[in-house]
Structures are given as structure tokens and as C-alpha cells.
Length: 534
Figure 1 (cartoon, rainbow, N blue to C red):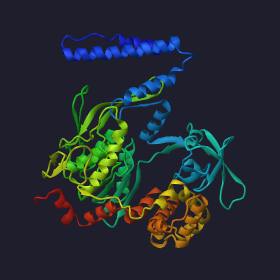
Figure 2 (cartoon, rainbow, N blue to C red; figure 1 turned 135 degrees about the vertical axis):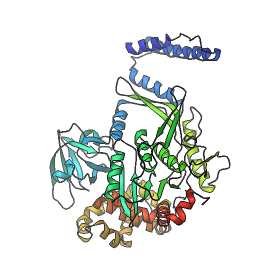
Figure 3 (cartoon, rainbow, N blue to C red; figure 1 turned 90 degrees about the horizontal axis):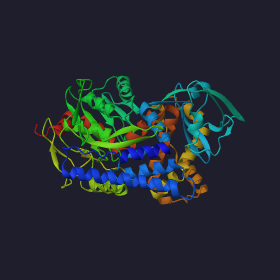
Figure 4 (cartoon, rainbow, N blue to C red; figure 1 turned 90 degrees about the vertical axis):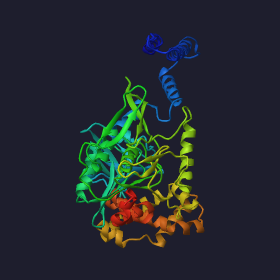
């Protein structure tokens, strides 16, 4: 606590004014000094007069969060525990046993084991129920508690007991923790003979390594769908490298400009000659930051067609500054501009975060009703001079509404109550072995398996047991959607995350289907979009 007092005194003692400062700058500096002095006064009164001893950690953390919340929507404070999670996410790996899990009705259920990971090596399987971790009863643990016990230093041991359908008693496993990759590429597969599809969920340290490996695995196709839907961003350098994969050497990818840092531009370092054919980028309202840098650069250079829904509009540059206790502050220091000069960040008012996020929802609805907002400033692309629009975020070249025809309040309630997840786990517990024998490959399952009406009826029966009243009309509206999602979840459990997207995309994604159709007729339909004058 004495250190905090010294820091406040030091802040209050910074009062030297430069001779070059204008009167307004001097007045602002003096006003800021007075506010620091006010903060020091409150601290002194708390320590001297408050009725009980004051634990300053939560007080100081609350004060920091409060200060930052009065600024832009993206400046933030991260405590030490939050920072550990962020670091793992960006670094692309952590040390643990290598399972994806869910918690349903107080029980930890293994969704998938990571191929080659410690858990898979000792025989842990998808759908196993973890009931004990070391000496701790695992039933009743929350989703946030489980990783604290399963993760640890590389080389250390953890013992778990699991319950497996069809096996009497408990199975005991001793697992040696190891480094586990956090993949940022969910899927990389071929569509037909010459189109590749890559789904990137965020930009971490390993993203471009994973991306290039996926591109090689597909056989280096010359047409590509880059799926950035739901990708909230990540590391700038990975976004620049990804954009550079498609653009010529020296092409500007993004520029930054701020009050306290010099303006700078980032350019493509490679020749962008790996993929020379048609390119489609899929975005939606959750594509943000690094995703918008990539899609904005591709659009501004007329390199590919953007399909989907308007992106989020997060174009503020944060500098993350570590603090002495392992926590950190993220302070906005600049704004991103696309190569044509568009500001990625959508408008906001300092201190009004709730309104900022509500405005995002309203903005999306407006965009679906009218893709050409007359208020949006116009810009020109750099190669062919097409009109593109500013005003925040990236606006697609082809706007595709979300397909909501299969959604009903009834099915939404089944999902919210956890009924669908519970049903899938119980169903695959009973049917995993028979499904594996009947459909040994993804291709055989994709072509030959469709969830029956009887199976969907059992899902509805479980819903009724869990308090979701059967709605005949809602069931009929959503039956196709339920069937596709059950099939996709079965594919995921049997063949991994990529299989999930291979089922979902062609059946439930209009934007994906448009992308495939556009690339199949690229010379006739794709190229004219990028150069209307030809």
C-alpha cells in the first residue's frame, strides 16, 4: 500500500511545463494534475478514516477499470488470471492433457481428445465422463474450475477417473501433461477439384504456420474461400502476413495514426504469388480487428470478393502494457486505416460502451435492410477504382443475409436449456461404435447418414423431460436444421472439427454456397465484380 501512495505522489509531482506548450495545453495539463491530486486525496482519506482495514487490491483494480471505461470501448484492464488466458490464446499452446470438454448437469464430458495428445495416448475417449481429478471430486465443478486442475507444468502427472458407457465401474488413467496446441485454423479442405476452403477462428502466433500447412495439405489450390466469420481478431503481424499471402510485395496492407505515436504503414513482404486464382473472403458481424485488416486490404486492392454481412468495425490499435503483478492495461494509441484510407473503427462516444454495442446490433439490422447506406463516405479501390464504403467496418461486395428459416423459439429453447448438447452426448455414448463401423470415413458418413425422424423425436422427448413443452409447429420448422446439426456434431465427434464445417457449410450457409458458385464461374462472375469497366 505504501508503494501505491508513493506512485500517486510521483504522479502528482509531474508539473513541469514546456516553454513550447500553448496555453490550452498548459491548462489541460494543470487540470489533469488536479485530478491526480484528487485521487491521492481520496486514497489518503480511505487509509486514515475508513471504518475497517482496507484491502486495496480490489479497490485499485476497480478504480483502474472505472477510469478506462470512461474512454473508448476497447481500452481495458486485465487482471493476472485474465492475462494468463490471453497469453495462452495468442501463444497457440498450453500445458495440459489435451481434451476438449463440456460441463452438462454438473458432469465433465470429454467432447474430443486432441490427436496425439496425452489423454488420447493413454486411451481417454470422446464422451467419457470425468468424475475425479487427482483427489478431488469432479462432479459439480464449473467450466472455469476444470482447467485449473487439468492444466499444469509440462511433465507433471494428473490422475483422473472416468465413467464410460457400456463399461462397468470407473476407469483410472494416469496422464503426463504436455504442450497442447491451441489451433487457430478450424478447417482446411477441398471443395471440388480446384477450390480450397480455410476457416480461421482467430489470429495467434501460429496462425500462418497452420494456414500454410492447410494450404499444402489441400494441394495448393488456385482458388480459395477464406472464412473469417466469427473471427474477432488477434495479432497484427499475423494479419499482415496473411494479407501478404495474397497481395504483391510492397502493397500497403494497413496504416496507423495516433496522437502519441508516429504514423506508420505495413506492407506485404512476399510476392503474393502462392495463390493466383479467384479469392472470396467470408465475413460477418463478429469479424473484427485483424479480420477487418485482412478483408479490407483484399477489397481495397481488388484482389478478392468479400461476401457476407458487414463486419464489427473495431479499428483501434491497443498497446498492451504489463504491470508488476502480472496484470496489464490495454490502451488505445492509434486508429487503423485500410489502404484506400477508410477508417475501420465505427463511431463511438467515450464512456458509452453499452450504447456502442447496442448500436452494433441496430447497425447490422439497418445494413440487411439496405446495403447502400447513403450516409457512408465513398472511397475508391486502388487497382480498378471501384466504389467501396467507409463509416466503420468492412462492407461486403455481396451482402448475404443469415438463413433463419429453420429457427424457431422451440428449438432455441432446446439449445438454451442444454437439451441438444445432453442428447448428443447420450446418443453418441450409445451409438458411437455402431456409427464408426457403419461409416468408417467422413465421406461415407456424409453421403450415407441422415438422422431419422425417430431420432429427432427422442430429442423432443428429452426436451419435454427437461421442461421444454413440445411445440409441433416449431418442431416442424426446425426439423431439417436439427437433423443437419445432429449430423454435424456426430461428424465432429468421429472425425474432428473440420468434419463439422464440411457438413454445416454446404447445407446451412448461403454465403458459403454463393462463394462456391462464384469461384466455379470466376471468369464470368468473379472478375467482373472486381473490375466493372471490363
